[in-house]
View 1 (cartoon, rainbow, N blue to C red):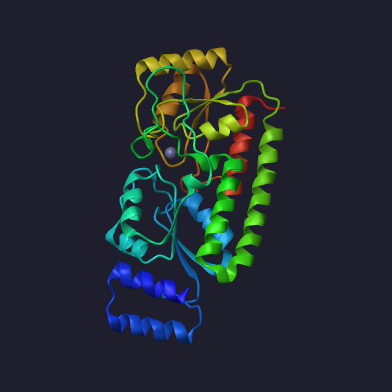
View 2 (cartoon, rainbow, N blue to C red):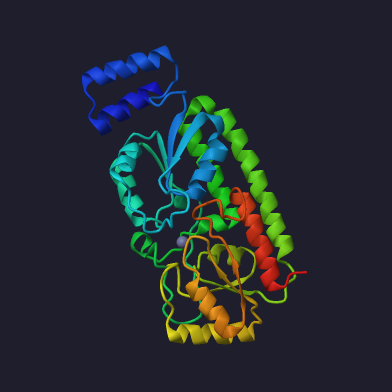
Length: 319
Ligand SMILES: [Zn+2]
C-alpha cells in the first residue's frame, strides 16, 4: 500500500523528491497509514449507489467521499476543481459509466490505478422505456453507443453482482484487509438476496403489471419482476413529453388499469401531476436512488428500496 501510494503520488501529482521522502517517512512511522490518516483506503464514489457499495463493503477500512452531494440531481453534475483534485489523489475510484458524462471524463483524466466502472461488473442492457415514439436513453448514449440503460442498481440481483465485483477489486487494491472485504461483501449480498425475495414475492400477484413514471429509471427492476415501465419522457427526468406521448400514456393507463403516476424525489413532479390530473390518477414517489436526502423514504439503499416496493404494491394492486 505504501509503495503504491508513493508511485501514484509521484506519477499523478508530479510530487517532488522532498515530498516523496516526507511521505515515505510518514508511512514508515504509521505502518499502513494513508495520506489522509487513519490507515484507511481513500475511496471516491461517483454517486449514492456507488457510495453505498463502497461503505458497506469497505467498512472501517475505507474513507469514502462522494462526488454528488446529497439532494443533487446527478446526471448533469460538473465537478468543482477541489473535487477533481481529490479524485486524482484517491486510492480507489468507483463509478458507473454513462450516468454522469462530466464525471466520467474527470475520472478518465484522473488516471487512478484502481478505478472501477460498476457497469463492467455485470451485464448492461438497452431498455425500451415505452411503446413507440422517441424514448431514447438520454444518458448513456454517447458512452455506450448502443443506448444502454445505466440504472442497473435498481435491480437487486444485478446490484449484488456488482457488489461481488467491488469486493474483489477492493481486495486487490488493499490486500491487507481482504478477509474483511470478503466478509462484508457476503453480508451485503445476503441483504440484497433478501430484498430480491421480498420483491419477487411482493409483486407476484397484482391487478396490473404496468406502472407510469417520470424518470424511466426502472427498466432493470421492471424486467426482473415481470413489470412494464412506461416512462413519461424517457430517461431524462427534466424533459417534457410530447402531446402525442401524453395521449399514448392516457390510453395505456386506461387499458392497463394503471392507478398511479410516479415521480421522483430529485426532479420536478410537474409533468407527473399534469398527467395524473388529466387522467384522474394518483401520484406517488418511486425513488431511483440517485441520491439520498432527509426527504428520502428510507435511510439507505435497502430502506428506500423497501419503500419503493410498498409504493409499487399499492399502485399495482398487489395481494
Ligand atoms: Zn437516471
